[in-house]
Length: 126
Image: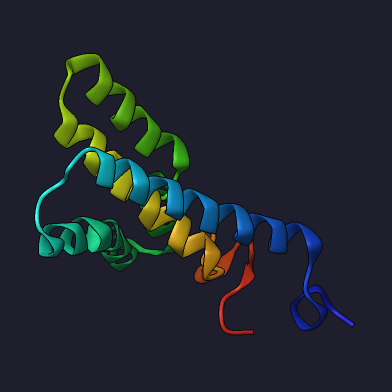
């Protein structure tokens, strides 16, 4: 009986939290009247470009990936947008938040430097 086979309460709560963040981010982007559907899609997948940093090795890859998958970064962009009165920044921050939330809801967590599949939500693929 391992956390991976039986489910883990903490991990399950973090996945639910991720789903809530994804929904909240989408609502923020919608209220901000952010562009056409294809622009939403582009912004939603853009943070995955950070995985290319793994070409420089697992330590650098994990650092760059985690930097682009922190809730705080998207919140800071939204706060900057509010301060500047820039709805585009608010919307992009909301979609960035949605991306992170979707990733967490699907079980893709912050990475450990040991490898891409090792995350704070468990090992991907088990």
